[in-house]
Length: 317
Image 1 (cartoon, one colour):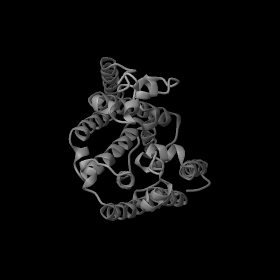
Image 2: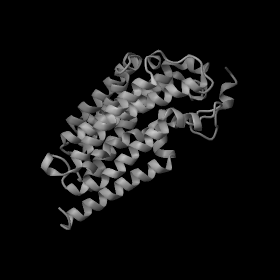
Image 3: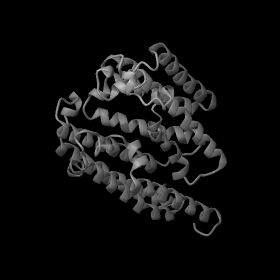
Image 4: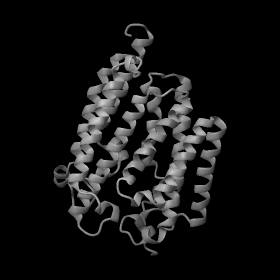
């Protein structure tokens, strides 16, 4: 295994790479609570940044723990062998120390800052333990666990910013998170079919037909709950019914994501010598690399900010 480090991009900091910073975009959902409640201010921004940082630290600690546990198998994998721990760029004792500091620090700061945030970060850590030990190997519950992680992030953002969450917001977040989990499994299954070889046992329990039915249910639920929330305060939703203007962004974003995870679309895009066409396995890469999705997110945020500004000035209600 002495040749493995030669495969690594030496320009990258191995300690930063081991934390998988590209995965941190998942934690941006902590800002959803103040955005959805139209409670944007300096205090909510700072609270959101704190929650974002704590979730990044907590999630990275578990990436390190997983890489430590899988170091031997990763060294035999054609792609995972390039990970810093498997490649020998970071020793196992150092990786353990990094994981302990990150997880312990995030829990300590969360509890000191706010009891509610401390509870959420603790629940997130316990969920990660359960997911890695059992849930990721259990059909359906693996997707539910992924969705629960997103909901906990949203709760964490609410706790850090003192925002009271609407029940419709929580339902919408849960449905969208389930949607992402199902799309991830669809892409994984299709790529496994294209590349051949063995697949993880839990992935073998799924089929495109089953995932399609599950997708239809959660897609309908996500759009419906968001539409109800955006219709205004009469239904305990947004503080203004003008948020209905953001509904097209949500619908287009969901449809675009479905296109990218469609088996035929993956077949058209897939290069059997690489992982092209399977970006829906990793939601964070969709946000960073798919221009229509990125523009949709930017459009939603800008429209929300404009609505908030007009409402504060009394131009709209």
